[in-house]
Image 1 (cartoon, rainbow, N blue to C red):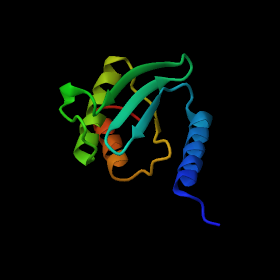
Image 2: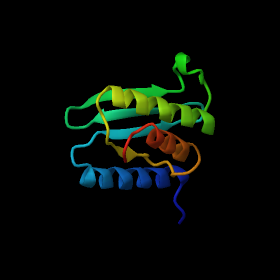
Image 3: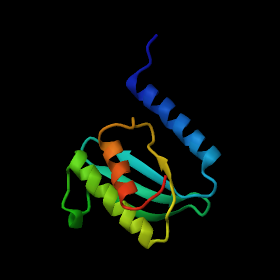
Amino acid sequence: MALKKQELFQKRRLRVRNKLRAENNGRPRLSVHRSSKNLSVQVIDDLNGVTLASASTLEKDLGMVGKNNVEAAAKIGAAIAERAKKAGVEEVVFDRGGFIFHGKIKALAEAAREGGLKF
C-alpha cells in the first residue's frame, strides 16, 4: 500500500529532526517552514528554548508579502543570515523539516551561506 503524501512528509520530518538532534553539538537550529503562500525561517536555541532571529515573507519591510518563490526565498535567506550574525550566531544546523532540499529551500540555504552562516 502506497503511503500518502502527508505521511511521507511526516516520515522525512522526523528523520531529519532526529538526525539533527544527534549531531547539533549545541549549535542553534535554522528551522524552515514553507506554506503554499509564504515562507518563514527561524534561528532557534533549543537548549534555552528561545528564538534568536527570524525572517518571513510576511514582513512588509522585506517587500515580499504573500510571495513564495525562489527570489523570495533567496531574499529571506540573506535576511536571516544578517539577523543571525547580529544576534551573535555564526554556525547553525539546517532543519529543512520534511521539505525536500530543492528549489526554494535550496535557494534559501545558499543565500544564508553567502550571507555568512555556516552549516
